[in-house]
Length: 386
Image (cartoon, rainbow, N blue to C red):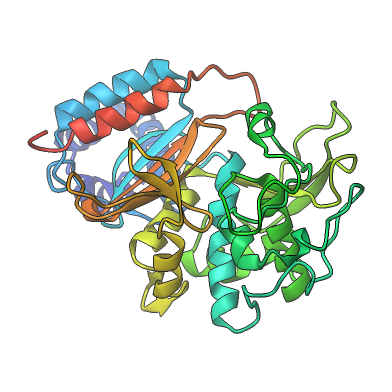
């Protein structure tokens, strides 16, 4: 058995001290040698089994232009931050990982960035026409129902969160509700408001036109080509009126609040690992293993700023993505989406970097929002020469 261990595992690992220990156990204690070999095999096989859940190669911090000591400081901060997992992927390879990157839990508003890819794919196929209006699609809602003026909003306006429809919606936070304009106060495409009604209706419109669920389409068109490991397309339904309803342990779930709107929110539950694959697809301009999954021009259009969201930081909103605009202080634009202000998926093309940050919000958690800004600061301070 020890010969098997030596030939399969010990030589590639080049752990001289382990190799000698396995061979220097006296023959009269062969049972101890056998027990040790069994233990060693189980450890290595466990490592190999874990590796099968991983679609990334690794790159050293030095090769990626990061300071290892600075990344150690980042690790120390993560220990007490409330983070559940974090990944940094450089040019398609993991340079830093922390926590359980395979754990699935709710990604909150980053769901909108997931829907972006599906619209890009089906617009390219000629199945979805973004010039169609709500009236063309026979979209209405519970009382007070939509006005004819509101029904003139196009799919394109909803994608930019500029519909001018300020109906109540499912999964709206208190801060979003407090900022919601009055009904009829703006024309379609006149102004930006981060609007869950727009986002929820986009999900229902996608399913109506394609006759596919969001979760099945995402699995077939995105997860399978990217070889995602934890996402399998399973989904369920949650009625939010029931305060005791547990979050389904599926890859996604529809959240209905039927006293607010007929259109549900569509939540995703994903691992940091699979989210990093998705971010890397966008870093690669939609191309994966020689196949164009998402059209490059769709990604360019989606990550172009159509609305100013932070004039001081020069941030904007594209189509289901937040945009950090290129300017005299930045080499190229970046784009990202957050969830509940503490989850983040960010793509920094000029740095060849994808950043994923997760907090397990499905149970008790303590993660002050300012910690996310601290983490981002530590990441860029870790770059060589910073």
